[in-house]
Image (cartoon, rainbow, N blue to C red; front, side, top):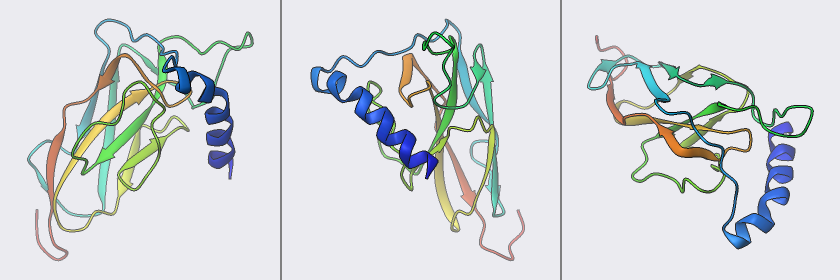
Length: 154
C-alpha cells in the first residue's frame, strides 16, 4: 500500500513537469558505477538466484527520502533491476515497477529471484528519490545467466 501511495504522490507532483518534458534529474558524480557483483556474467546457477548489487561513488538511501529543506540527498539513490528486458526504459522519466523492472526503494542491495530454468538477462539502473535515473544515468553492464533445471548440478 505504501508503494502505491508513494507512486501516486510522486506522479501527481511530476505530472506538470512530464507534460512539459522538464523533469528535474539529479546529477551523478563523475566515476559513479553500479554493478552486479553476483552472479557473474555467463554463469549457470541453481535457483533461486541471489543477486548482489554493487555501487561505487554514490550512496544508497530509501526512495522518497529528502532533507529537511525538501531537497533530495545529493549523490544518493536506490537500485532498480531489469530482468529479461529488450531495451532500456526512458532515462528522463520515473521508472515504473513491473514484472521485468523491480524497485528496491527500501535501499536493498540484494534480492533472491525465482527465475524459471533457461537464459536470463539482468541489469541495474540506479535512480534518485523519485525513481528517476541520474544524469548521466548510472547503469550496469547487462549480464546473461542460465538457471539450471531443478535437480541439475551447476
